[in-house]
Every structure is written in C-alpha cells, then in structure tokens.
Image (cartoon, rainbow, N blue to C red; front, side, top):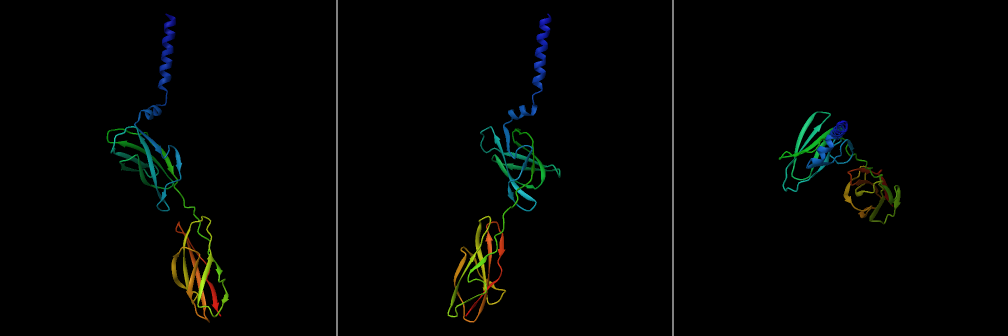
Length: 227
C-alpha cells in the first residue's frame, strides 16, 4: 500500500510541473497567426522617413492557413500616448505610419477569431545620415584667369566630390555680374561647353551641386576676364 501512495505522489508532481510550462509559449504554438516583424521587445531603426518625427514601417506575420483573400486586422497601440489604431490588410504584411521614439504593442487577428500574441517594440525610426556634396571648385578657367581676347566661346570645367558618391547633377549660373543668373540646370557632367563671350568683359559663374538625397551645395562665385 505504501508503494502505491508513493507512485501516485510521483504522478502528481509531474502533473504540477507540466502546468508550469510557459502558457504563452503553448498559446503561440497553437496560434495560426505568428508575428515575425517587428520582433518582440526590440528597438526598430529601419523603415521609410516621412517627417522629422514620423516614419512608416512594414509589419509582417505568418498565417498557417492557406486560405486565399484572407482579411487581417492589425491592432496597434501607441503605449506612450495610449492611442489605439486598427489597420486592415489582405496580405501577410502592412505598411503603417509610426511616431519616432515611441513604444508600441501590436497584434494581428482575422475575421474568424484567429489571433496572434501581443508583441511590443520601440520605434526609433531611420535617420538620414547622407552628407551634402562638397562645393565645386573651378578647373578651367581658374578663378581670376584671363583668357585670350580672340575667344568667342568658353568651356567651363569644374570638380565636385561627395562622400556618399551620389551626385545627380549641377546647376550652372553665369553672367556679367556677381549675381549671375541661372544659365542651365541639371547638367549631368562636370563641364559645359561653348558659352558665348566677348572681348573686354569679365564673367562670373558658380555651380550648385545636387545629390540623390536632395542635398545641395553652392560653390563660391568664380570669375574670369576676356583679354
């Protein structure tokens, strides 16, 4: 009889231990909707910049049922402001606008009562680390040069550098005063040829260098004389 009591006690201990398994893990294993990104308890630094304080982020999840044309509901809570938003998606992802440097929780459900776990994350957001191009320098003619009085045209050549190597074009300003007017915009090379000039005049020019991130730099005003 004593052995029987000990055996029953052993079964009871095993049963109690089993109940101690993480219930959230078991719930996740049963769920047909599994969140994948942004990850739980993470700091998110990517996405697409909207403004200085906002960005969009693509939320992603898995659905373990192959049903087509399924409708999902993304419940997003801004934990800092206690604001709840609901978004809809017919696919396994959704692009959603967020506030930078705010904490969020999110959960995905569907119309037939499937639901994911609730995950939390901090949205740091992406930052624009691009660098503006260096101001262009005059190569030919160098600033202050005097060219032949018999010249009727001039070829302007300049040099521009960009740490990001993403220069997309130049605007050329040219004229007979230091407030030179725009002659041509969006030049794709660092030279412009056959500009008409006249003997006895002084000409002024400058270059605005532009990159693919919207950054610009303006050179100093160069000058040269004819004759």
